Length: 126
Image 1: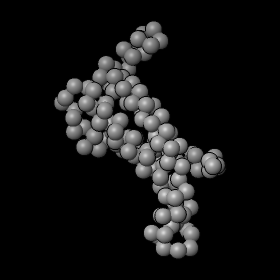
Image 2: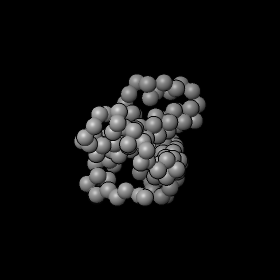
Image 3: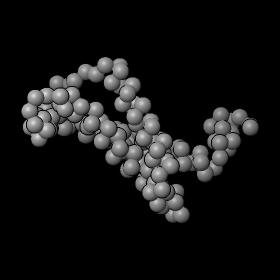
Image 4: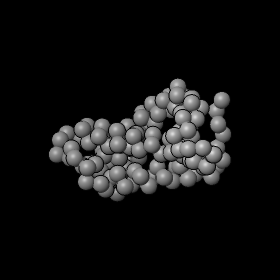
């Protein structure tokens, strides 16, 4: 059964993910493959972002289990038993595809420039 979340939960998770993406772009290890062809950087940043979204999604779902009675290990076992793993991984695959498209667009925009991107997509001359 799907668990419903309030709009506040969704907004907080989205804000966390957005902030983490901004941080990932400025970390030194995110530019580890900067001198290689652009696809390496795109794949590297996509993987970093995908792992980050997975960790944030898991932590948001685990947060209510922190306040249950019992030990941390017991609460973690309850949490892991209640997760719908097929749904979780299907959403993660969807995120992987969307993140890849986002990173490709962002890095292409960075490489060819905002003015050229506007001209290509909208026909607007800057």
